[in-house]
Image 1: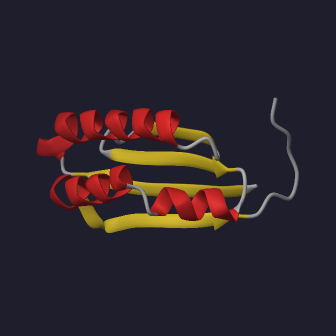
Image 2: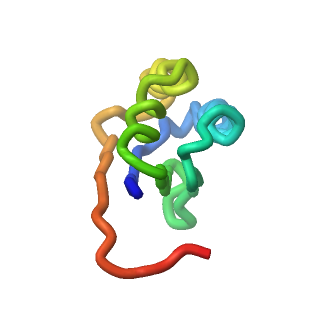
Length: 101
């Protein structure tokens, strides 16, 4: 399993528009990427412009496929307009303990 934590801040004036784009992205991943086993966007309760994605993929091939989809390219273009790109943080995680149900 491949686990990813991705965070970035939205431009406040673009927040609603960006959240709609994020919802479209989640729907596209769910519909088109069977190797994506978890793909959830969260908004911080303290800072509503801070978005955190929890992502999990069945394997490296599923993650690579995700990065090459048209919907990922579309989201990257949208976020270039709607997010503060200096805040982007993407981290690949290694599981040391835990479970899924």
